[in-house]
Length: 281
Ligand code: A3P
Image (tube, rainbow, N blue to C red; front, top):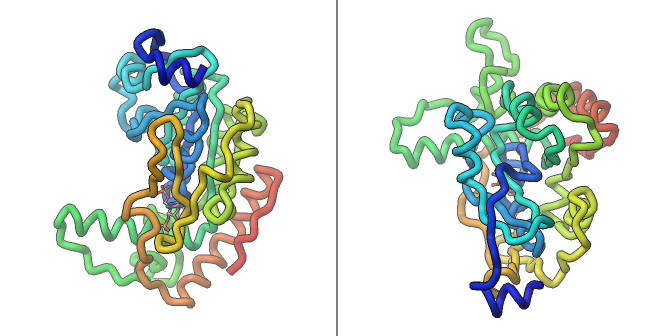
């Protein structure tokens, strides 16, 4: 089948599905892009390259618009995966996804919440730099100060922090989807050793086991795995510079404060997903 497509591309009939079969809903900075690229190594997977933001920001554009964002497939067994990390923290997304496709397979990649927060914080900083905006001279510590009370409490209005309250956001998804329909990837494990996490995903997505260790190349200089996609060419593809950049410095004291704050939420999340993660500092 694969060789047929390579040698007789003009004889392959393509069509479009109206929506994806699976969604990577987040979490922002959890490793969502790497996970999408890694899943795309599978012959039966087609991906939506850009984040469509359909179920959060672009919902008013309608399902017709969403369908147009889907890649072509040439067999019913091929599955489409879309990723928009904003879905995880969106109030409206779970209900809307369920309305469109109650059988949608939901994938969430989580990561140590303290390092995720710092990564998010770093990204916000670089986004502002790129947009040439005058940077608010926020001290790196400011995300833990509540200006109103003056007390040293965690500022939940600050997105890089609130995005890490996995229990709060996940509970929202559980209102519409059964846990068995959702698959959680341990992002810290995936980053260091993608294969096992990919094997689990192949099972969850009901795909034949196919992704090979030989398609995953660890790049010592980058410190990450790069991907060899046989569907395209044999070129090995590493993610861009915005992934894995140096984090902004955050004092140990602040990291500890965040860790203490997240502990309760982490335990709640473990209970919801019936699984534990090593998120101590
Ligand atoms: P850092 O930039 O904090 O290191 P997302 O794609 O959701 O924005 O996640 C970005 C994170 O993906 C990066 O966070 C990085 O650690 C992680 N990651 C996991 N596997 C990766 C890979 N193979 N290449 C690049 N980044 C990877």
